Figure 1 (cartoon, rainbow, N blue to C red):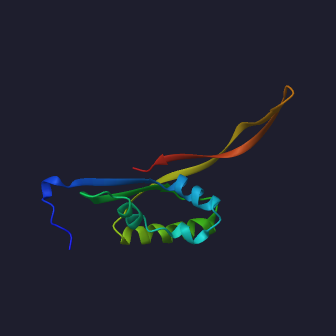
Figure 2 (cartoon, rainbow, N blue to C red):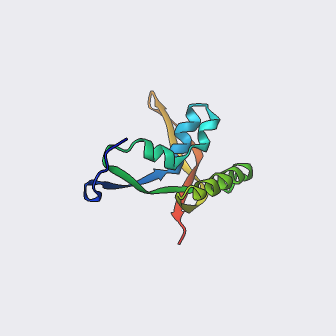
Length: 122
């Protein structure tokens, strides 16, 4: 049995999760089952002695231009909320921007690529 630690010696921890970067990092691993990660359990697993998890915040936005993806994302967000994760959802808009892809021997390759603009909803 672990010894009881007096409350004044416990540090409260709040985890802030960037859903966009987390998703793409997991996606690059090519292990889709990890996309259903339990963020509360993950956050708790990295605590040190004398630390207590108070809250977990998840920041993300729905990719409205991908309906199937949005449906799965909504289900995931609902699951997170049931685990007491606070979900801060933003509004995303897909806009084309000019991106320089490569420069070789003085020749620049340019292409319009989509870029997401994120704004927290109030």
